Length: 262
Figure 1 (cartoon, rainbow, N blue to C red):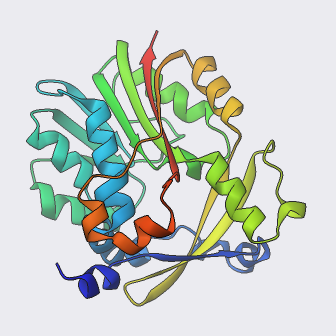
Figure 2: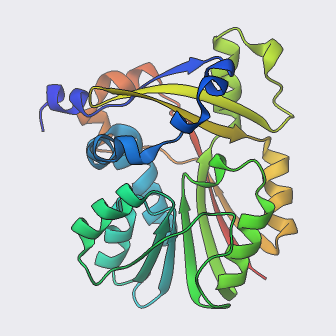
């Protein structure tokens, strides 16, 4: 893929006022409306393809034969990579359009279901060795119901491998935008960006919480933290995306956890 093609599939973001969400909440986080554009970007862009997904796979390690749940599986990119490594994967997502793309990728036999993280999940207790939650928890204001369900479907000793927005990065975004007055790092705060992707514009709204609140939520749900990771991008990214890497050499935008179910 050429640099111009990579640029075409990039996601550009712009921080917007919280009042933008109240105009029409139904248009916020509407992945059904931009599923194809998002999937095309996710397959090839720097942030997903050369940073977040490789980091998740590295943390998962050897998954051969492990029963794995992909929570918020989207169009199935991480699901496919885990399956290729020998995992026995099930997945769910709240977006029917994203699951339709996942089924095209994974085949009709793939175990895919429509479900909301934070609601009761359609799996028995102690079903999975691993749960992967890739960039999904930060869409929830309250983590307690979601983590309780993920703990329920994990066997004792199983792992939750999760990636979320890095709270320090979100704090920096607001400071650089001059919005310290409407954002406090120590609060659980809703924040919204406008994504421009594949010729479409959409609002994406997430919840940021301080690091200590994340840790308290995990331990309160019965998880023991074994790894907190702030990885570098895949080495290939420096050649493929030299301008982006040079502009932000720290590349600190996501935080990764490996947690064990006690």
